[in-house]
Image 1 (cartoon, rainbow, N blue to C red):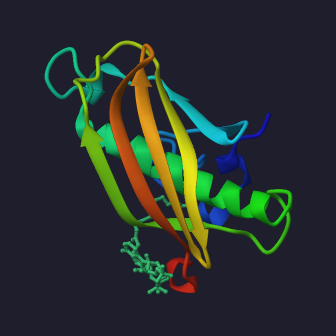
Image 2 (image 1 turned 45 degrees about the vertical axis):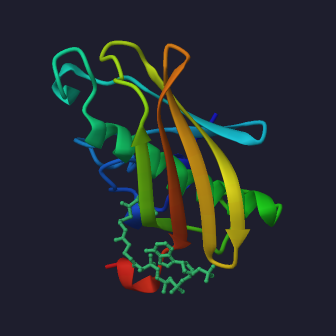
Length: 153
Ligand SMILES: CCCCCCCC(=O)SCCNC(=O)CCNC(=O)[C@H](O)C(C)(C)COP(=O)(O)OP(=O)(O)OC[C@H]1O[C@@H](n2cnc3c(N)ncnc32)[C@H](O)[C@@H]1OP(=O)(O)O
């Protein structure tokens, strides 16, 4: 099954968090699961904050790109369109808020689950919760805006 990020056109597929063409990036993959979206990610030893625990900046990055991908998919879904249909919906981050609820253990695969809170014009608000072994360790919210033309080189 193709992930949301697999549909990003080449010129926007280099994002450090989600670009499939960024060999050094996280290359996250997000899918629908009913009305929620899900991303699974395996942190590496270099993603350490304090030994044994995941760096919060990585968690913010995962939440960020999970939510911008969700925003794009939600917009297609709202218009009952396939993700490879044109014109393409691409979203960037207007704001990213993250709360760290508990230390996130380094070792288990992480799961980020998202839910669309609001779609209004060019704006989609997405909330997400990050789990380690079923325990919610971080929660976030992204205000995603349709990417302005000025972003494309
Ligand atoms: C596509 C694949 C790549 C994936 C990217 C992954 C995530 C990223 O790292 S993106 C990079 C980081 N983000 C950026 O660099 C964005 C820089 N900022 C911008 O370009 C602009 O400020 C941008 C696009 C966010 C908003 O500008 P613009 O589209 O003109 O917004 P505007 O028309 O004023 O506002 C529209 C709505 O969004 C809201 N909004 C605008 N900016 C923000 C913001 N920064 N925070 C919260 N809400 C905002 C407005 O309040 C308004 O809401 P409402 O309709 O309810 O009144």
